[in-house]
Image (cartoon, rainbow, N blue to C red):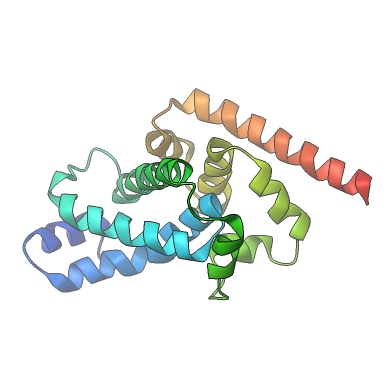
Length: 181
């Protein structure tokens, strides 16, 4: 199997198959990351399209200073953050309308991880964006501390601390839910 960096070079030379291969390798990861942040299929799909459009448009800027995966997740985080900011500004869409747009599609990686555990799904929704991001990147997408730090534009130490706080917060939320049951 060809390395991501080799595919990038081929794609830059006009090889559409290489670009499709990069898309195929990461489409589900990027979708599931976006879904974990926005909790809505329609919004996650929109983010997904934006991420891959920006990836294709700026592929020439990939210099290999980090892995392609890290570079792509950085784009994903930026697009998702921008999308959430815009959504917050454009509070024109009612929550009911957003829920109505949600349809049943193939489960994302997060949904598979969280399948059957509604308490865990709800608890994840209560975490901050940064906490959801660090837990998602580390435990669902298998990113290393270094990769996660690069994506989140933080130090490895900061990511370790944030991961610890996020895990504790998630445990507290789940403990409260168990206590309520």
